[in-house]
Length: 185
Image (cartoon, rainbow, N blue to C red; front, side, top):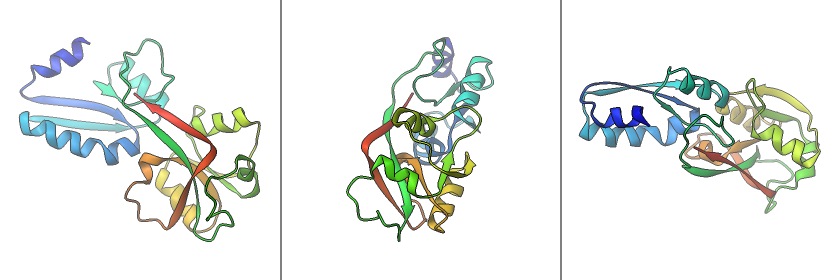
């Protein structure tokens, strides 16, 4: 907590934030804009990574603060920020495009684009919890690459609702029949 207290006394300097793309895209611009009204001489550096990288950056002092998901490493001080729904994304012409909620077992019926980098992420945890193994045809940590692949009919995926705000891609997002979330801290 001393690092946070030190930030309150800063008049100039740099704040380094470890983050992932959806937070960097949808939350941080407004947060930084508001912060800079009171602290115009403070600059920011955003380091984009996966949850494991961000936790490591926090613990070794590479960043001053970071956004991760629960569960996180126990040695981190966390503050719950938001619960973010995980939604199935599919092309506009997908047979289940008009369903109210996407059936879990239908994740097995289309090629799957997996959002994951290194350490296991929440989508793989959904598969384990429901004892399913979709046919993963593409794996990346780039949300926008997945949206483009889905838009082009190469398969379906599961993405956090936060990244699906204001997207240019023509895709449909549906809640799973058994809702899934990630807790952002």
